Length: 156
Image (cartoon, rainbow, N blue to C red; front, side, top):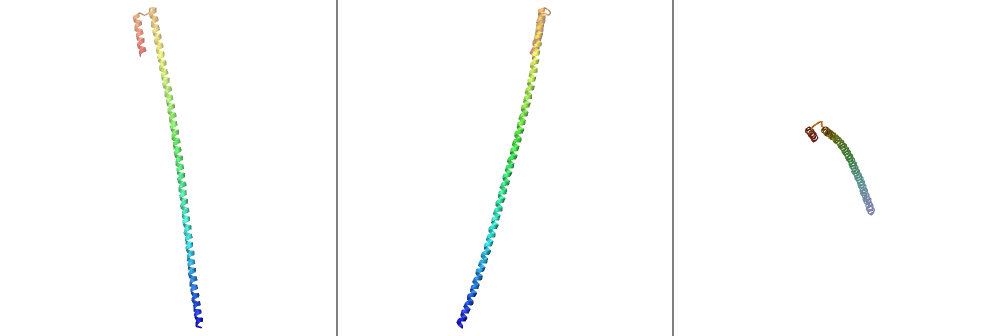
């Protein structure tokens, strides 16, 4: 009876220890599952954050590239406008220079024509004076005075 009692107590003790061990094992398993879940959630959170950061970085780079392109286009337009203005100004100056040259050429031609007319008139006066002298209508002294006057006119 004593042995039976001890055996029963030993069995109860073994069952108690087995139950305790099972509970401890269950707690460990639950804790391990909880840690695994938390680790997975943390990994997902970090992956999401990394993806968002990468997306922001790419968006910023794309925006900068677009701005750089717009700036380059703006500068190209400005340069083209400046070049067009420069060419227009050069063309205007060339036209003005041509008009000025034509004006000066016309004035020079008019001046030359005046000189030719003046020379022709002077020649006619000289011929007339010579004819009058030959015909005896004027004397030599008067002819010399007239020719001297004509010479002064030519000099002016």
